[in-house]
Amino acid sequence: MENIIPSTKFNQYPVIVTYSPMKGRYFVAKRDIALGEVVLKCLPLSTAPFDNHRKRYCHTCKIYNSSSNSFKFYCKSCDLCYFCDRECFNQCFPIEQKIYDEKVIYNKSLFLKHELTCNISRKFSTWNINDKHMKSVVRLLVQILAERLIEKSDSKEKVNIEKESSINDLYNENSLELNEQTSSKNSDFLVALNNNFQDFLLLQSHLLDWPNDIKRDWLKHEKFLMNLFKSSKLLDEDDKFDDLLHMISKIESNGFGVYYKCKGKNVLFGRAIYPYASFFNHSCDANCDAIQDNYDKDELLLSTLVDDELLCNGKKLHGEMMFVALRNILKGEELTISYIQDENGLLPLQSRRQKLLSEYYFLCQCCKCITDEKQYRKKKKNVKNRNVKLNT
Ligand SMILES: C[S@@+](CC[C@H](N)C(=O)[O-])C[C@H]1O[C@@H](n2cnc3c(N)ncnc32)[C@H](O)[C@@H]1O
Image 1 (cartoon, rainbow, N blue to C red):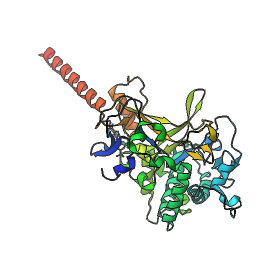
Image 2 (image 1 turned 180 degrees about the vertical axis):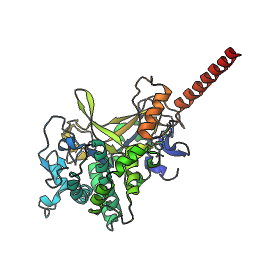
Image 3 (image 1 turned 45 degrees about the vertical axis):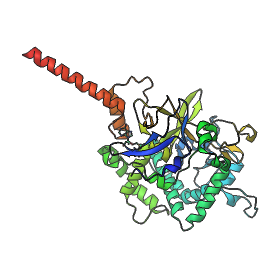
Image 4 (image 1 turned 90 degrees about the horizontal axis):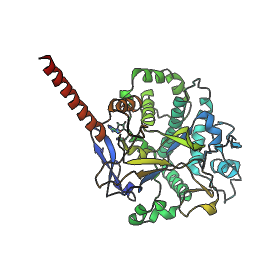
């Protein structure tokens, strides 16, 4: 299990992936890391805005329009994919342009994914459910299954080449050749890592730990969802609902919220999957923090961008996630983030563990919880001994 991810994947970052039977895979510092240093940068495998936010989220460059205006360009068939301008629209719909024009630039991966999911997205709007959480999880599942199909298709090699070249176009290939020494010192030169379906498959599912009521909620929709998926090309012949539930559980246990800024506050507008970022285990005394690129930063002019920023038809490509060290970290230390909000570290052991159990389905085994647990047991034992003495 621990060897699944070749450590060369993370060459330019000060991390390696290791494994323990109790906590699964997790990141460890490859060398001493200084406070504020960038530990990892990655791009989302897929992002799904909540339905009521979709008209302000650009499907191509991932910008979020924090004013109340909807984008004018969109797919009239699925009414799910919206675009901030004509160029971003064209990247997904080369057919709509003069395709014989050799200068047409489009993103093949975006185009293929949309082709595979447009139909199912349209039918999806007939799903009679108010739960925006379940909806966004299924939206992500649809995109992830499309990714699987693209990777598996006969033209896999061709698609990968094109996909890579379009990604390189977008993500400025110059920075790929930087050596480890310079890149790790300067976050501007670090290339955000991209993921594929195989990386998603490595994520942990907690389906077997789900409480009955959660499982029941999903089973209620089995018929609708299976019919929906069967009407698309997205399912493999031997895919059962249980397989989909495992993927849903992976999405639930590993998804990140995506936010835009409004009056200085972060507002949640959807969720995304960043498979490599999911190798950060939780700690109640985390030594790293996630910083999401603000989806609504309106720095669109090419001239204002530094050389290696991620570009998409002359604009910044949004959605990158960056992890930074919150303190000095020694070589060999586990790198962790916090999955729960406990800014001042005031939540007691039981509350923290309960939150993680009910939202993430695991019993926290971080150093802080283990130490707190030992102290709690010691205190309990002392009280018991005192009571015994008092009674005798
Ligand atoms: C986002 S993943 C982290 C990577 C994971 N270890 C893996 O192998 O894929 C979250 C899962 O890792 C495990 N995990 C993370 N932090 C943990 C902790 N503090 N104690 C115990 N298990 C933990 C839990 O199973 C949790 O559902």
